[in-house]
Amino acid sequence: MIILYILLAIVILLCMVLIHEFGHYIAGKILKFKITEFSVGFGFPLFSKTNKKTGEKFSLRVFPLGGYCAFFGEDDDCNENNPQAFNNQKPWKRIIVFVAGVFANFVTAIIFSWILLCSIGYDVKQIVRYDTSYANPYEVGDVVTNVNGVKVDFAFGENFVPLINAQKETASKYYFDYYEEHKNVDCPLYTFEMTVKRNGNIQNLTITIYPEIETTSDGVNIISHTGLESGEGEEPCIRSYVYDFWSGFCRSFEMAVGFAWVVLKSLWLLLTFQVPITQMGGTISTIAEMANYASQSLSYMLIFIPLIAANLAIFNILPFPALDGSHVLFTLIEWIRGKPINRKIENIIHFVGLCILFGFVIIVDILHFVL
Image 1: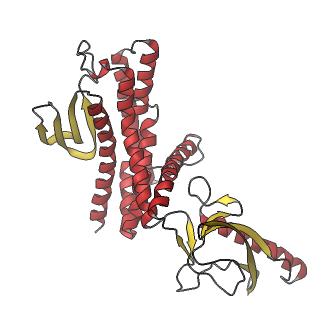
Image 2: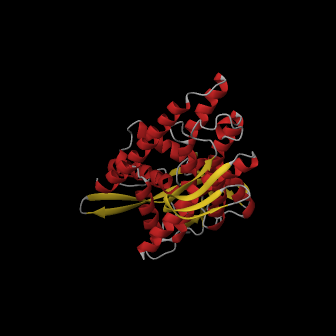
């Protein structure tokens, strides 16, 4: 069964890459660039068909982990006098074509964020029940937006569960310290603020955390209760908030930016050695992780799709040789100088960058599985 999930992960990853290349293709067609080939996969062609009218070749190749859109006169100077050659097109047009792949990935991240929010929800939580033995001002249906001044947001704030647990830990220490001194918990109750959306209106609630003394062989333990704890066998008190059609659409833009921000933040942590390289993953480890999550629940794929789309968008816009961001940088330099950098030198730089990228992906995959 896991083989099917692996195949599903490969298909999704392939689709995300093809969407990127299709962005280049659409921009090229709109700006009337001459396209020589649109390929699904790399390596030996299994199937090829040429459009006799346009001369464009559509190919299916043996290694299905990607694809490319090839433009006439893109990689050489043999057609330097041909106005149809890619390198002879105006710089602003070429920049649009380079950026179009990134734009296509980001639009994909927005669309699938919208689908995610309107189907199963994600980071924002809604109260579906609560323990009425605790006198807290909850109402069923409350949508939690802030906990003690911190926004509930996976990218630009914190997740709900860690925020609540942090308050419970603080309350437990507060009550325990008082108990150690007075041998009772009859002290002012610990409270914190929670902001919820109730019937379309914003409400600021004061939540009380109630203590319970538990005597163990190791001493006294203070258990803190917020009224949102689930007993054994009971349904959870909170669930991910499922947005309606319009509100989900409005937040999908913020969410796509959030996914992109998470990718950038992860890259920064890696470059500044704040996280080990073993926590990173290449293509194989990404497929393995997607397959693993999909085997638990197919709904997890709804989270992976916008994340991968945002990942591809951010990764490709980086000004590293062989990536779209680097091509944009070289084109901007040409635009400013009034003439291009030697094409042979540029091609060598891009080739070396491509080799480094492939090497890096292979190394992080090996380290991810070995260490």
